[in-house]
Image (cartoon, rainbow, N blue to C red; front, side, top):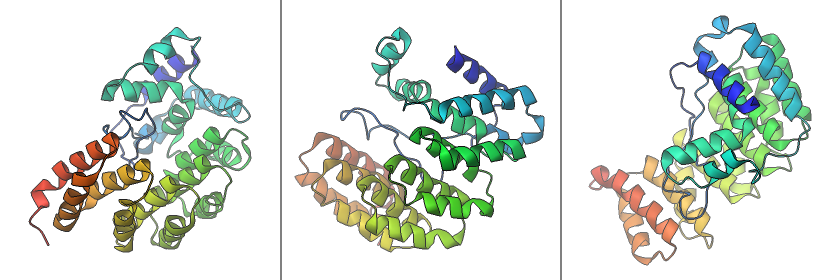
Length: 279
C-alpha cells in the first residue's frame, strides 16, 4: 500500500520531464539489459515547489527516514504483484518493474530539486548517514537537482565511498550539478574507479562535457574482456559519436560474439548511420 500511496502522491505533482544528463540502464537480465532506453527522473517539484502540499512532503520525509537503516530492496517472490512485474520484458514493463521494486527511485523522483529547508536537511542527513546504500544514493541525486554548489563537497566525498551504488550516484549528482569544476572528478573516476560501470559512465560524462579523452576511453573499452563493458561503451558511443565511431564500431560488430553486445553495437550503428560520412 505504501508504494501505491507514494505513486498517487507523486502523480499529484506531475510536470514536464527533466531528463538526467547521462541516462543509464538501471538493470535487467542479460537478454534485455542494453536493448532498452533508460528510466529517467522527472523531478516534478523543480518547477512548482511552492505548490507542493505540505502533507506530501511529510509522507516523503517519513518514507525517507524509514528507509535509512532498512536492508536494500529485493524483489519479494512472495508478493504476487512484484513477481508478475519481474516477468515483464518490454520497455514499459521494464520501467514499471524498476519503478515499483526500487523505492529509492520513487523517493529520488519525489524529492529531487527540493528547495524546502527541512527536506534538504533530511536528504543531506540520509546522504551522509544512511546505512541503506540505495537510500544514500537516492538522497545524493535528489539533492543534485537543487543545483546548489554547497553540496559539491558532499558529492565529491561520496566518490570515495566503498559502495559502488553510492559512488555511481555521486558521479551522477556531479553531472546533474553541471559545474565546470567537475572535470577533474570525472577524469579521476574514469581512470581509477574500481567499477567498470563507473569508469565508463565517467568517461561518457567527460566527453559530454567537452573532453575528447572521454571518447578515447570509451573506444578502448570496446576491446574489454567483459561483454558488459563493451556493450555499455557501445551504448554511449552510439549516443554521442559520429562518422569515425560508426566505421570503428562496424568493424567490432563483425567480430563480436556476445549476443547482448552485438545487439547494442547494432543499435548504436543505427543511431550513428546518419553521420556515417562525417570525418
